[in-house]
Amino acid sequence: MPDFSNVKAKELVSTEYVSIDASDSLSNLLTKLRKSNDMNALVFNKDELLGVASEQGFLRNVDVSKTKVRSILRTCPKITPDHTLLAIAQLMRDADVRMIPVVEKGRVSGVVRAQA
Image (tube, rainbow, N blue to C red):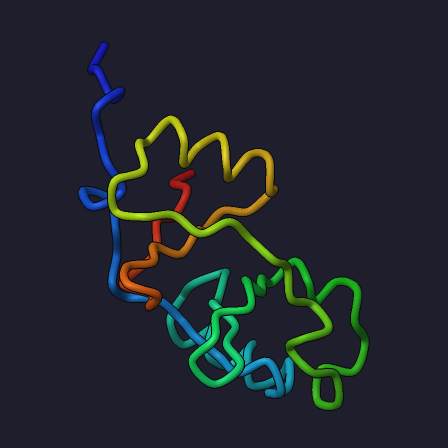
């Protein structure tokens, strides 16, 4: 069995991710997610990372054209490039998220996703 104890976030990070403003509509979010074939998006207020929105959030909302992304926003932990795979897995489990932003010098440099 491979030893993953020393694997770091910087080895897993993806710089391709969907992002959206918290004031945007759910219909815009859905369009972005479908175009990218992704299920999660980072939600920002200008340059400030607020959290993650996922397709699961749509289940709670009926009118996607009028509902704003901030209504389905979930706060999530942030990690650094030096977080270990084990720590990332524990954070994902505890926060019940499948994507965590990697932050360097106060800015998002990418994301780490749970792989099914």
